Amino acid sequence: MTDANPWILDIPPLQGLGLMRLTDDGWGDEDRDPGVLIRTAIEAGVTLLDTAEMYGNEATVGRALGSHRDEVTLCSKFGVYWGESGRFDDWSVKADPQTVRSAIDGTLERLGVDYLDVYYLHHRSEDTPIEDTVTAMAELKSAGKIRHLGLSNITVDDIRRAHAVHPIAVVQQQWSLAHREAELFLPTLAELGIALVAHSPLGHGNLTGTHDTPLDVALAGVALNRGVTPGQVALAWVHHRGSHSGATVVPLPGTTSISHLRKNVEAAHLILNDSDIELLDAAL
Image (tube, rainbow, N blue to C red; front, top):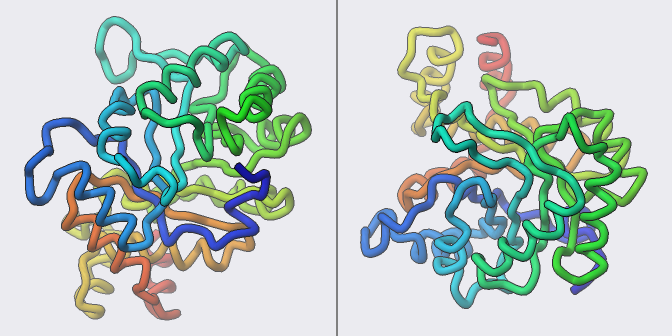
């Protein structure tokens, strides 16, 4: 393993593949087989794979990855845990050093790998100082269990405090036409040499151009003119904005569909012109 930051010194991945919804239900399905999905992604240049302990599917991801471990940047997250009710809003954060040390061993065992390329704190904690969490994460790096430290769902102040303890390689935040709060992070990330992984660039599937809102009308109009789908336009917008942000940005659309994956890859090569960008921005 190398200490070189893969986000800065090497060529960043074309885009990432979010695996939050990957399940065992797709095996043998021609459009949703997890193993075929990951092989197709790798062949298309989508080499960043993202999961989390919270998703409950690390074992499925590991099985789907198979012998392709050395061909990908493998990422997982810790720190968010479901409550007993099963409700979507019933969860809590545990980011204390003991949790850091125990969580990584479970993740590595479920994935069937010896180390992670990036290990994220999944959500900031109100109880544990981020300095304590990052110190424990740095111990995992020293032990060879992770290559790089990442943060997700945090603040700019969290980033600076964490980075002062140990270099942070990547921050994961939501960024799409519908959610632009991540843009507030970009100057700090560019300054510190930290990459942004932009999750949910399709607005959790809501940027479809089928609703009667100014943004959807604009998406539908650009898509019609370019001969693509509104979702591809929305993803291409994140690629465009990222390339002009001053920071390294890797969009992270999530899908379990091979056909959707291929459309997402096509969107990475869709070049929006100035009038497209002006129309979309004006719709906001």
